[in-house]
Structure formats: C-alpha cells, structure tokens
Image (cartoon, rainbow, N blue to C red; front, side, top):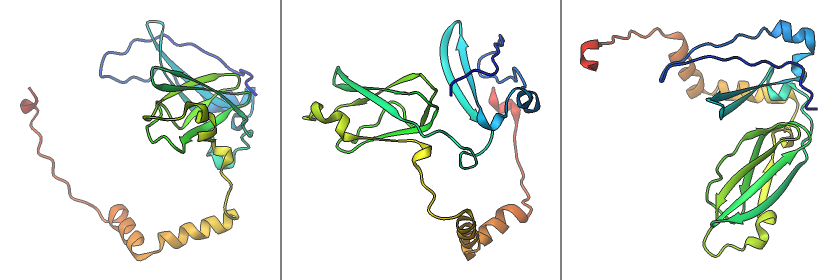
Length: 193
C-alpha cells in the first residue's frame, strides 16, 4: 500500500572496484514491526547526492505472496525519434514488462518494479515510418501478478519431477552435484603485474 514501516540511511565510503557490507538488517527485528511477507525492502544507492541505482527485495518467492493486482497507467510522448513512456501505479507492481507489437527496438528498461505512487520513464527508439498515433495501442504491459498458474501446485511439482527424472537431466545433476572434481589451478600472481 506504500506505507513506510521502517526507514534508515547509512553513509559509507567504498573504494573503486571494491565491495563492502554496509549494513545488516535483522528480519526478526523487521517482523516485530510488521509481517515481512507483506513488505518490500527498497535499497537505493547514491554517490555524492546523485541517485545511482535501486534494488527491491521480497522476503519470499512471488508465488508464495499475495501481491496486489497492479493497475498501471501509461502516458506516451515522442521526443527526438523516441517514444517516452511514463508508467505509474497506485500499488506495488512487481517485474513490470513492456513489449511492443510493431516495434522490435529494445526498451531502455524492462522487468522493473514500480513502487506505489511512483512514476517510471522508459524509452524506445521509433522504427522508420512508425505510426506514432498508435503507440499506446501497440504496447502490452504485464506484471508478475498477471501470470496465472497452469495447474495446481501438486501438478506443477509433479511436472518438475518428471523433467528432472528424464535421463539427460538426471545424469547431468549426478555429474555436476555428486561426482567430486579434481581441479588444479596454476596461478602465478607475478604475471598480473
């Protein structure tokens, strides 16, 4: 629903080409505030006050959650031979995917999340002689909540077992998971300089 149940800022310095754990968040502490299966963790990275990236994390697989059905509104405008789509939703929209029927050019982003009340802009180069009047009719937008299961969980699990037990899959699993591999690595650090 977009209500913030926990918020925090952490300032840190990380050298180039390095990684560093900045903060650890206890799921049990978050569970005291609210059931985490009803929440989305959003981590945003800023450098010198400039937005760099964002990651969203769910606390279980999508199929085990009751995600709200997203009603995504879309506006489009054309600038410099590009279609600029502005997508927004009043509820959390997980893994939003956009495709165009008549335009095969890639979108600037795809399979992204939209937070409640947020607007996201993506673009797509227009094809030669493309009719810009039909841009909104030409696109299809789907989210993870639009995916309907084909059968029951039991039927899905039985299908997975059937696929796993096909000889090629089973023997590949045995080879890669059960047979120890002898690996010899010849590495001379002096050659890196």
